[in-house]
Image 1 (cartoon, rainbow, N blue to C red):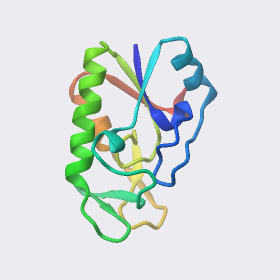
Image 2: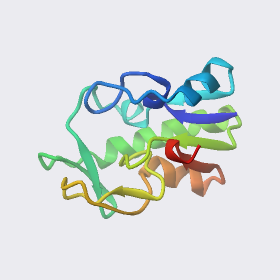
Image 3: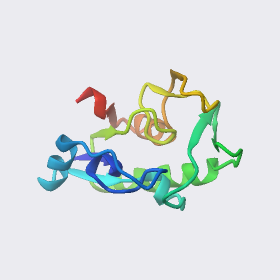
Image 4: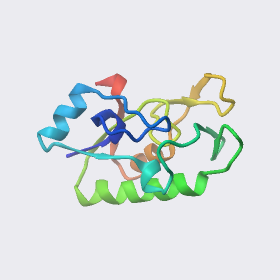
Length: 137
């Protein structure tokens, strides 16, 4: 079983109130092979919401609000779902402060990418769940 970013499954949960549908992910969910989650919603953040980026170990919105606690709470809840479903792999939205894998935005809201993982990705990797981005499938 896989856990996937809900926005990739066509669920309107991104910061902008939209989704980033990926047909391969949608097919996995329809076949019962993947479970969609949005860690940011699970952490209590609204949709739509202010855009956010990681800066060191914190997550801030563009207007400077620290939303680290909500992002961590959502990652913990999404990890519980992954464990309950015996997920061994995750396919997550690239560059996201929660779901990014390998590359994330640098926290300056300038579009610059740096090496790093989103909060949820870090939790999954610590629990030996393989993580790839939708760009890698």
